[in-house]
Length: 209
Image (cartoon, rainbow, N blue to C red; front, side):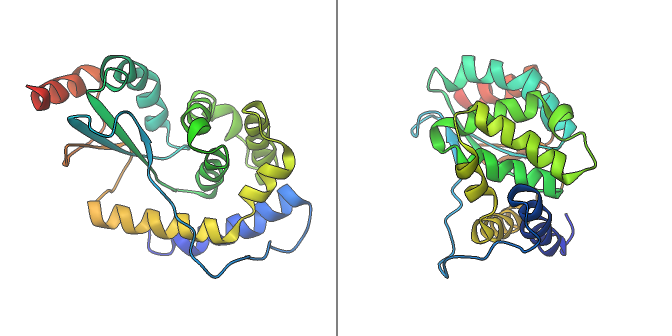
């Protein structure tokens, strides 16, 4: 998480992404002077007694492993039963991770976590190319599978104002919370590193008891 990443991410989002997705050489123009809102993505009941905040990147292999081995059990046992609220915060280590998050947010609150499931489950497939244009097409296919059309996806993924707001929000959040790697988990404000489900379960149960 280097200080210069915001510039790198914006160049990638507005340059390579604009070229690959829109088949043009110029970056898309921003459309509004007002900074877009970048809300946390939340799953679960607002009044759940335990809040878990997860910082994760869609291109992080450890995050994909955490998703595969932990999230389904966490959702079934704690989130769906009203015991835990999950607050998901995206981390952008690279341009592919930023693009994936932009596409996932394009689906709206109702589809965000479903798209996120696909991004983590198929991480090696969609993010495995060194060619940005191929990655863009892979992401667009995931978006279309979620019910979006090309025009909607392109509009979201070429939104320069949103890309800048997302990067600025990400950098402010990780600085405030002292996040240095992913996944990083906060349980009712207490910071933890990556863990398996049994370790997470013990910490949650301690908060509930």
